[in-house]
Length: 402
Ligand SMILES: *Cc1c(COP(=O)(O)O)cnc(C)c1O
Image: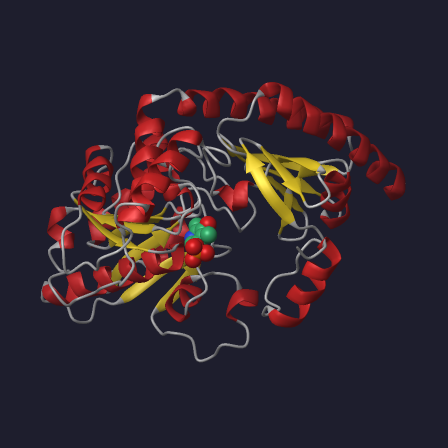
């Protein structure tokens, strides 16, 4: 087997350089812990970026995937397979939606949502209704359509011409949105809580106002729950916190706890615009990834993971706020459930690296926001470990600023 440095050297010549990677080679995981090639262990507050919500190597998920791999991995969506139907049944049963389209990633789920929204308007005799309003600071993916929908110039840079028809307004600003949405607006697309944009939560009433605006104008409400869905905010889907239902919702990340799976959910009326041939995906909803998703949905709806997320999330947020009181370098603490962010006045990268040396994986977004998205099974003791580590590092950062 190659040593860690050989692996890293090889990666740096053979793998496209699209990620700035940490110089560590991870080899195994169990629950909230990860191990690297040297045997050093880490507590994982990244969870593959809000993907492994049930932790690593979850026994029930691992068993289901292993059994399915020995039975049937893939056949094409030309045929029915029972695991896919079961995932759809569970998603429909536990959400606003009537129908599910399966794909393999978040970007693909959003692509499907954008296509469906536009086609629905065309099918309903409104060919000019194609404009889609999204939020500044949003993140919807890296394909041409989804980066065009993403309200961050740095993500669109270099890829002109982007897809026409997208407009951006500030997040959580109902007046700005109302000024942009009219009878030619096909859809409003947004994340209930902005993830990559810096863990930004809307005011409590915002999503209700967006829903009302969409109802008044006939625009569709599309929620990107790729990061917030599957229990991350303490409910199965974040929209449940806000007393509204969308017309279309996208999922991916945690849907199959690390196996690549995306989904686009819609009401019957809207989903009717996706007939045979309108859209497709070779790998969408294979028996293999579906076997994982069935277990994920079963565990999230039957076991106490969501309770744990709400309780440990509230505890975690309280402890982060205590750090904010103690340290000048902390600007703000935000989030819901176990989607938490701590905005600093300084760059966070050196804190991420120092945490890693001390055995804690966290990540930093938008330069100054430390993001915490551990498995939803994290314990208060594990949170205490990270808080203690951060306390020391923030004290050092305070001192440096003086
Ligand atoms: C991660 C993410 C995406 C993109 O998902 P990919 O699987 O990387 O394509 C889209 N929207 C949101 C809100 C995300 O967090």
